[in-house]
Image (tube, rainbow, N blue to C red; front, top):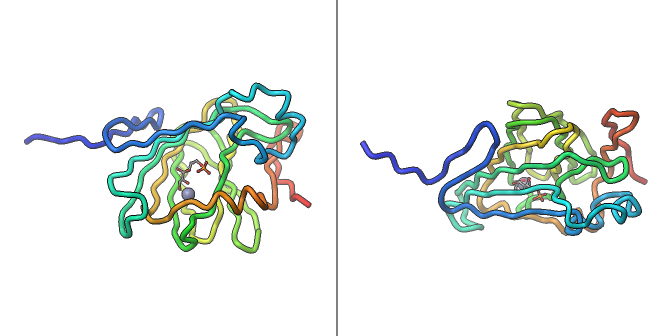
Length: 186
Ligand code: S6P
Ligand code: ZN
């Protein structure tokens, strides 16, 4: 029997290899406006890597009924008191959900509904998180090693980054006396 691989997941690192994989990287410069402490951000190297994303897209973006599979590797670090984190987004089609599953490291999945209520689910190797529709999602690395997680979401979900760019989340996850604490934003 011949086995044809289209995509392989390395379950130690979360890395994807194979065909139909789209890759991206975000440095501190590209996350301007996302972190709260602008002064602390200005003191850091803008080219410093914050996270890399890979997405296995076997169907076209926007295809109804399809699924995408992704991998995110988020570096450890702080901007002032705020943990390195992903930009965060609602899905453009608001009712579309998603799964996240942690491969390595420790983190916080920060979830915000449309009424701007925020809650956190803690991420550790194996922890698997259902992100319901109508819920913005962002991940912070609260550990001192890379945080790696896998994701699966509908191919017609799309991404609304604009709402987060304009209004942010209503709480920030800060490192206070060495511990992560969700701090409401005025
Ligand atoms: C896609 C999914 C993830 C994120 C990735 C980076 O729906 O939620 O693959 O794209 O974790 O986060 P962001 O907010 O920069 O897209
Ligand atoms: Zn998403």
